Amino acid sequence: MAFELPDLPYAHDALADLGMSRETMEYHHDLHHKAYVDNGNKLIAGTEWEGKSLEDVVRGTYQKGAVAQNGIFNNASQHWNHCQFWEMMGPGKSAMPSELEARISDAFGSVEKFKEEFSAAGAGQFGSGWCWLVVDTDGALKVTKTENGVNPLCFGQTALLGCDVWEHSYYIDFRNKRPAYLSNFLDHLVNWENVAARLSHA
Ligand code: FE
Image 1 (cartoon, rainbow, N blue to C red):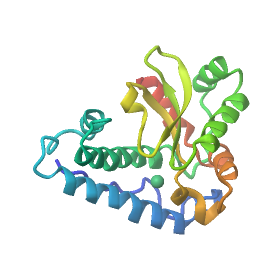
Image 2: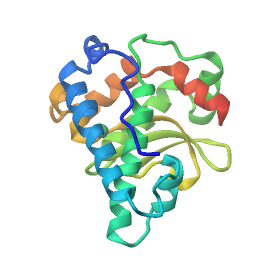
Image 3: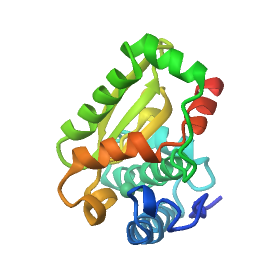
Image 4: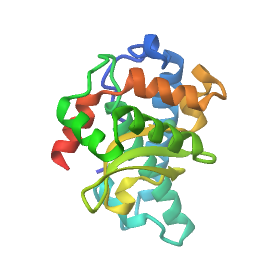
């Protein structure tokens, strides 16, 4: 089945008061994410990946040598990443469910320590990429960062939370202040109930 651009799970201006403007959403979802979907579909047509699930395409094309496969990976992984990213945010200012809070505190010392580590990973990703909270293959919660479209699927990890640190995600609202974008993301934009649901399915 061809990739499809999902609707945002909220209105384009739903996060505007929380630091992610309608203009950012219009560029980011309607143009950038759509381009990954359209380009991915063009590149996959007629290849062995046509009809495969998005997850299988991402895992199967990761680090394949051929340039054509790299193009498929880049677009498929960014399609997957953005599908998760929209769901991981919300306008509801959700509180962190207690079980998730306990797991995060166990793994990182405290929620504040987790936020520091997550923000440092995002700020320290040189160039475009993502920072993540994952369940690693050993079952432990870890903070990671990845370049470009690379994501936790590539390493057999479960993504609980991911933040897009490509400039297109923050330049309209935060200009060059990536650390301010990251702390706003953690303090105001994350849908912690979505993160907790991912943990319970991990
Ligand atoms: Fe993006």
